[in-house]
Amino acid sequence: MTESLLSIDDFSVVYDVEPPVAAVKNVTLDIRRGEIVGLAGESGSGKTTLAYGVQRLLKPPAVITSGSVVFHDESGDDFDINSLDVEQMRRFRWDKISMVFQGAMNALNPVSTIGAQLEDVFIVHRPAMSRAERRAAVIELLEIVKVGAQRRRSYPHELSGGMRQRVMIAMALALRPQLMVMDEPTTALDVLVQREILRQISQLRHEFGFSVIFITHDLPLLLEISDRIAIMREGEIVELGTAEEIWFQPRHDYTRDLLRSFPRLTGEKGVVVR
Amino acid sequence: MTTLEFSHVTKIYNVRGSGQLKALDDVSFTLRSHQTIGLVGQSGSGKSTIAKILTQLEVPTHGEVRLDGAPIPRRGAGLRSYRQKLRMVFQDPFASLNPSHTIRHHIERPLRLDHVVGRQDVDAEVRRLLERVRLEPDAVMERRPHELSGGQRQRVAIARALASRPALLVADEPVSMLDVSIRLGVLNLLADLQREEGLGVLYITHDLATARHFSDEIIVLNQGRVVERGPADDVILRPRDPYTRELRAASPDPEEFFRNRTTQTSGGAR
Image (tube, rainbow over all chains, first blue to last red):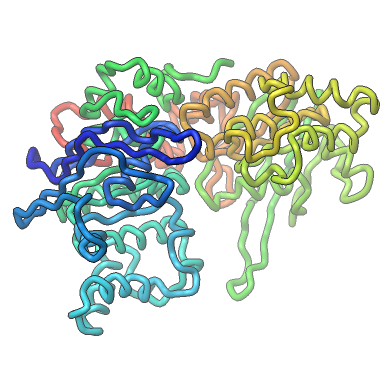
């Protein structure tokens, strides 16, 4: 668990508009192999910019102004993500680090079947696979995330929100990446479906051993699923600790504010004043 | 004192190809001024069908809705006057405001349409309403929705709902699209307004934690049926129905989570 997978060092991103906006400021964070790291913060705190930035998924006017991101591959090789060329980067993405985007309804192609979209991943990244191998892989993936193989001929609109999010997870899992970045993966879902998806993420993590960067503004949820939590505010990580440390001994005032800001299901703190 | 009776309502939709769908099955409740009812349940439980019937966007298949003892008129001035007494706040403040109109326009419309105040007093009333929802009138009146944050937009939607001086408010997931850190502020605002204006509020949500703290009474819906109802703390802290228990177990609850997690060393969903 202590072996490092991704080393983010002094990483900064600026949106080069007038006046320039420093979205991520000198962030240093180590993601260990197999752990779930939660990134918490309000809209505009830089959590999504950071997660996209370490995969070089940002577009202008975003500019990475400092820092390095090094991926320690299981083969023993180190990849400095900032120095990969376009072709290396294309191979790297999804193979080593994959993403589950917010709002599965918008992330899937509405005019293509689930099976075809999953197959696309293999066509692009595993060109040597035969058609039969691809089909078998798609069926296996749909079974792993409990959507069921028979759904491969379904279009996204024929599936519920929870099913679509599972398909997104299957897609992210396809190449057995070592890191999955999940951006608000359950925010649009109701509590029962959310809980099932979280269980599944946890289970798959144990089974396949990947690490997760889990982005959400839902701190109660993050406290339950994360090994460690980074609290972000105005582009900086103001506090980093295990879920227990954040819950029992928050050190930063802002963390305490965040913890106070949500009504507790069974406790008395953070209540609506009535 | 206004009393809304939702009485033995059943709503059946005809679904092409797969027959009939019973969205609501014999649902009854009474909403009065000065009272907040939380309506909870998962997607597809019938929460939004209730909101649609209350606003007369849908008509019950069986049963009826009565306001102060009288049935709801289907059209014309009677329906307009009913809708003046019952207003809605929608989930998505990005979609419920018109992007091409100013904030002033949004608040003015109901004031003019419902003749709430005389023409010469409209401006002062718009200001009063914006102040009511803790917005600075001069800072927001001439702006358009995209220039405001999500929380500010939802405050505008609340001010608009209050413009007609309704007795009842239906709030369908009014904070679920907002950042966790500002949800409490908007809920506290709604709670203040509810108390000060004596509103009857139907708070529709799948978030048990806010439902508990915000409501007097909670009604739990599952597949169109009321499975449990009672005082908020009773329903959430001591649920009797298996479905309510399931909802409660699925909701994030760090307090209980860390209480139970004594010797575990790594994370993981329960």
